[in-house]
View 1 (cartoon, rainbow, N blue to C red):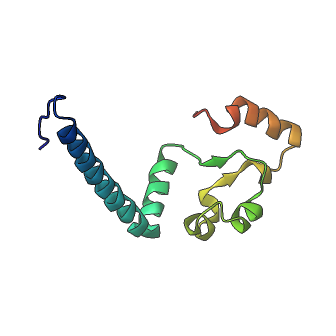
View 2: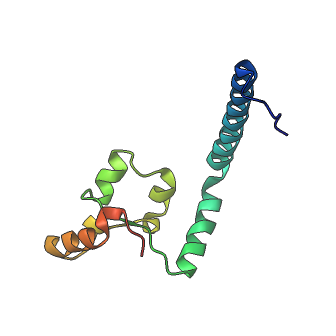
Length: 112
C-alpha cells in the first residue's frame, strides 16, 4: 500500500504525498463518472427508497419550480419527474407560513 517515509527525507515525503493525491484524484474522477452514468433509473430507485421512508426532498429557497428549471439549478432527472422535488415557493400557503417554515428549517441547514 503506502510506503513509510521518514521526515528526514523531505523529497520522499513530497513524492509520497504527490503520489497519494494523484491516486485520490483518480478515484474521485472514477466515482464522478460512475455517478454521471448512473442514469434516471437509479434516480427513480433512490426516490422510491426515500418515499418508502417518508422522506420528501423540499427546496426551501424563494425561487419557484419554473425559475429553478430555467436557471438550470435542477437537473433533468427532476424535470422528467416533476414530483421528485417539492418546491416550497409553489406550495398553496401564505408567504408568512413559507417564511416560518424556512426559519424553522434554518433555511435548509437542518434535516427533519
